[in-house]
Image (spheres, helix red, strand yellow):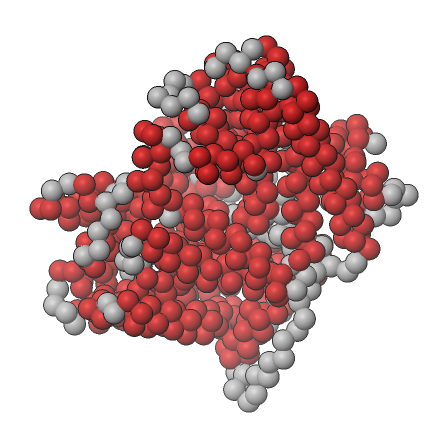
Length: 634
């Protein structure tokens, strides 16, 4: 059974490995191996404090295990290559099916990279001279810890699938994932503590907690074996084995419920549209507001945006920095825009209904924009007013009145435009299984919307910075309205002209290719290899290798100078609450800080603009080349 499912998974992976998926797989493998190599280097270094090596490894193993446990909440519902529902009609008991699926879970890039990372435990035992016996115990601990990570990840996935059948469960899952992601993004707060710990070692209480966690049991077994305490080492290894077996047993029990119960669906919230939703646009607004309140996936994303904004802006209070509190509403609006970047992809093949009504594209886009503003703007204003009153930073009102209108208008335009131009196919709501997070998240799309939405507020910010006091709010309000109208008009025109192709893409997940009649002449067959589908779609197969690498690298890394080293230090300098941390500009002399911030923002915008410009240039060139191959007919 296990061998059959493993072969089935390998066949599915092999036949579904298109260019785009292969690129993501290679990128994830390289990133994971880089982090694993970092753990191995930490295990092999010399430290001034003897216990620091195992403390750092314990912290690394804890973070790695947390990635396995919480990855389903952040990146999707775990490994769904083989779905349990596909075997529901076979005469298999849930435990037997769980055993086969568990065996197939160890096949993939993730478990392999994790095995390499956990091998740092063996390196540490050899480096510190604990002996061959400790190395053997380390090998056993590595295998058992890998088993615990994989099985616990499947258990957490199943738990989330059961919990997120209600709005309360969806909100709790969003709170956990938002707190983790916001904590990682605010980790600069802990940088002074980390620097002190690297010099003097971690406190004894922190080391004890690292050892008490299951991720540190392997270190505990190696230390016990090095001291000759074999009963303790055997007990720790037996504890790891028992924990893995317990995770498998819990997963098998939840698997039975997943196969026997109906798919996840929210309890409809009563909402009466009254007499105001009689026009085509207001009808779309009423439909979207009902969707935001009833669809568990959208509700989960909305709670995630709210929790992320609160955690990200409240966490710096631990070091006495209240700089981000007045901007909580801005962070919330940014993340609501990011999670709304796939509106048409979430609706799926429901798009066919719009194709039956002539001229419905404009009404649908405008209705979605108004509904997005009705969902986002009130909460944004409440968060902003409450945090400004709480901190007493009333001097920030001109800046807030400048940035927020521009950001809300820009977000309302960017979300619909990206959703039409770059949708991500998802499972139709009527076909979603028990795992609500199985569709995952396209972080390239999220990052794109975050950057573009933030960039829409740049003109208003510079108008307030360089012009009179009234210039910022005026430019922000006018720019927000103009961007919402222009980007919405662009999205409606694109939707109206390419709705059938978009429907086919959302239904099949395969980008439609225009079929052309055979030309009267046959072009010479090229000896070059066929370009990968994702490069051909973007037109990058015509670009030199160096420009391909630059486009990908610039679009992925532009947020570092733009946001992390530009926008955040600018907010600190604007408010006067400065926490240098890892912000480069804040470590420079005072007369060089603003030039450095400006240079970083310009660098980020340059990377973004040039990356998009090169990509669009070669995409247009590819389309022109494709058009030249079509024979002209009278």
